[in-house]
Length: 448
Image (cartoon, rainbow, N blue to C red; front, top):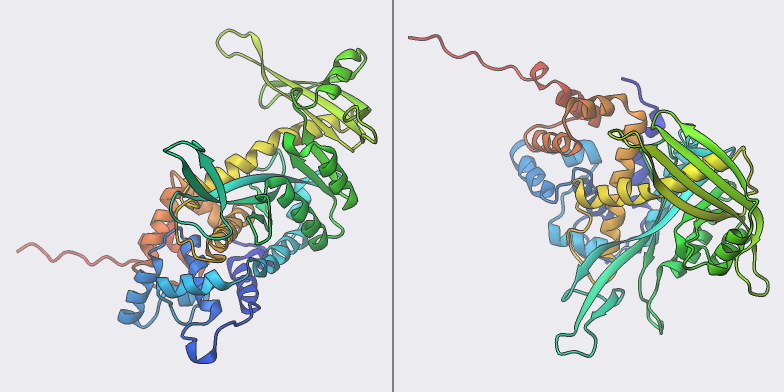
């Protein structure tokens, strides 16, 4: 089964090795037992197979067979102990992983996979949303965010947290989301206020444009983004935006829209889903009543669907957005569907990472510097591999179709690599599809 060469497992793994090999050595030569590459790649292998115990299994396999799957699949020469792996990964600056995400996106562009994600000609939705991946009342580091419960009371408690602002490319017709390098939301020395999602967004927008200077970007975000500072930040980096506006937080805008009786209106029917879209819009509306308020274009979407039992049509969805893109009959339906798919970063990305085997909220180790966020990044890279395989790898797709669930498929893959040596990822998948073709079962002896 053919896969585009530059998006194959071996090509992506090679790209990841290049990224890890670029990480500068910070240790004294006399204290180096394991290379940075082997330590970080071993951590990635744990996230890739969604199994923190993989190192112990492969170490035992090495002692017995003098070979192991960390070597054949991931190019690891020496398997580190868990504690050594954590100590090494903790010291690595998280921005060293940016190289992989940047080149990964270029590979997708080169393979024309990103073309399918255009929501409008040469424009791609980049959804922004924050997520938490660590929380504790006892374990913490200088970068932890804090939240105080029952402040001033006898039972006052402080919870320590790690959060990240994730950005992902998505399309309403695509189940797969393409994760890009996130921005860590963390406290740093000298800050008088805690870091927050909007501050992280400003940093991320700048980095995103630096990494992809020519890409047409539409930023998609919830109501906290539809404020003048964030709109101006997006425009200053030559990006479009599509931000949710809640009537409760944009009263001036809502009153103006309610008072205007002649909004442009059209309807579209999605026959496959049995949905009727009613769309209303107006261009060049003031975001708020203040001085120097930016002009925005307002889009309201209502979705109706017939009840299967009663046949009565009911409203199933309503939302509104502001954008800098001039609205007309030719693009409002596409933009409304694009706005609706914002939930996928929560469902297809965060929910998958937390509840579908990746266990991103599991405490693999907190560390003192960057361990927690670096493990988040390694898990995200593993997820990115798998998303690409769902898009392009026919062999991987065949395996997915062969099992009742994704988690069961990974359970099988883990069991096989704990027992047998595989020379490549493709051989492992081929074996998983039909193990009987590879295993010769001994016939039982004849009955006496």
